[in-house]
Image 1: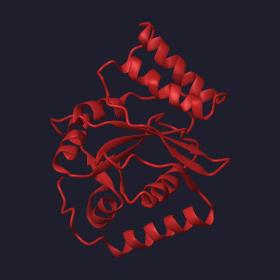
Image 2: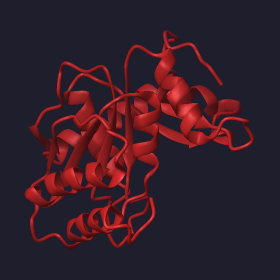
Image 3: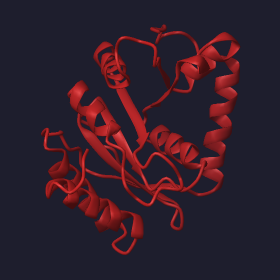
Image 4: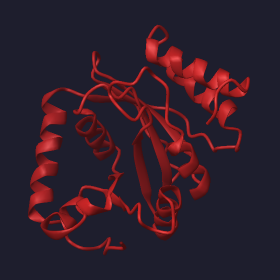
Length: 209
């Protein structure tokens, strides 16, 4: 479902974005470590996913960095009066009926754009035990783009971006590197301990991908 990337944003999307940015500034969030400036396309692997406000925080953080984040959404959300709004907010429609799977569809979107920062909550749900879904990795691999880890600290109200990592194809080893970075941000956080153990189990052949 290609769309015009140069189209003027709708009034509704501009109002919503201003409200989101106002919340970001009023609540006092800051960027502790910025995004790398030398890459134009990447997957932002965000964690932990603990609140529905995460979208607001990452929208504010990426605005501070001069980029507009993108996210995946069911294709039925991109119809009717909501179509342009969803595109304006950074949505990328994924059609489960397509002959291409979700990974291939998003990889194709990466290929047609000069800039794309895809934000993925890798835990999948706020009620996770800490294990990650592997979709973020498969998308980055298929699109041939790096993964940038992003840590949201709700207590200190900071967003911290890590160094970009190019997927090697060895999911377990790459996930362990990512997990170790997150553990370094908050060593005693239980979800990050679970993530590190998940990676080690994959490496040991005790867990699938």
